[in-house]
Image 1 (cartoon, rainbow, N blue to C red):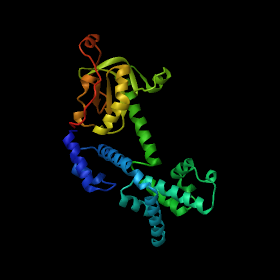
Image 2 (cartoon, one colour; image 1 turned 120 degrees about the horizontal axis):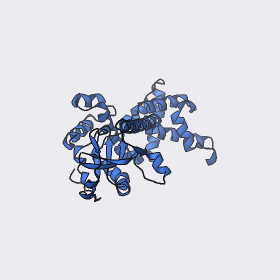
Image 3 (cartoon, rainbow, N blue to C red; image 1 turned 60 degrees about the horizontal axis):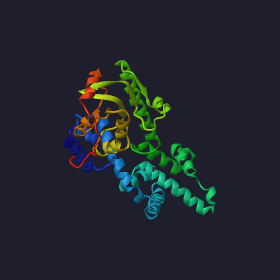
Image 4 (cartoon, rainbow, N blue to C red; image 1 turned 30 degrees about the horizontal axis):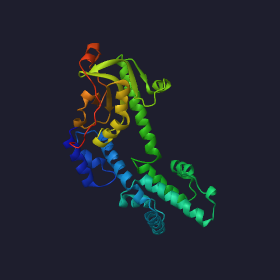
Length: 301
């Protein structure tokens, strides 16, 4: 996907300006898979939430949300959806709104019952109640919490499970595809057993050549490769892999911005699938290429 097309998708998303916009985006960009659109939007929402979360979690704002919730449930004949409505109005993740309100509810309960700090609800207990709202004493609040976590596609226990499952699924697909191609490799677990700390998903036992570039390792990402996310991965993972294992391949299964794939000479090749047209490395290629990690400037993107 070209950067200009990605920017059009982002502009349309901000124009729609609502949590669930998959249908509208798919109608506007029918050539883009839904999973790609959802990945693009999800990553943008996560970035926005990270910037605004502490504003919403500020005591004065949290007290205001909680008071609004208490007022609304008394005037809506026990109809569920108050927290979800508040979250949408203030543009906060429903699951995070649920978490903040649940913490505030038990904080208020502790004060009312004069509980000591060691008797108050712990963070682990809050997490357990978010996973199982039936444990919440206030059944109406439990229903509100459940609705928020079921609705949220970016945060919350259900989303965490789906994200972990997607990551495992794509890693397994990578290994299965390599096995079918007859490419020998060791996986992340085996690398860690050898004492490596930062490891790619697979390290090839015999390097391959893809599109004229040597591949020693492959990293699988069940996401879309946008500028910010790719920059973070370069800094935190990819250059470390290059320094340790040489040049490699990154697979963004949900697609990526084409302009990011211009660091092949520095040892990072990007794809959205396991390449099938490969050959085993000719050692003479090593005499022709020198891979040097450079400080990458993203300002031009």
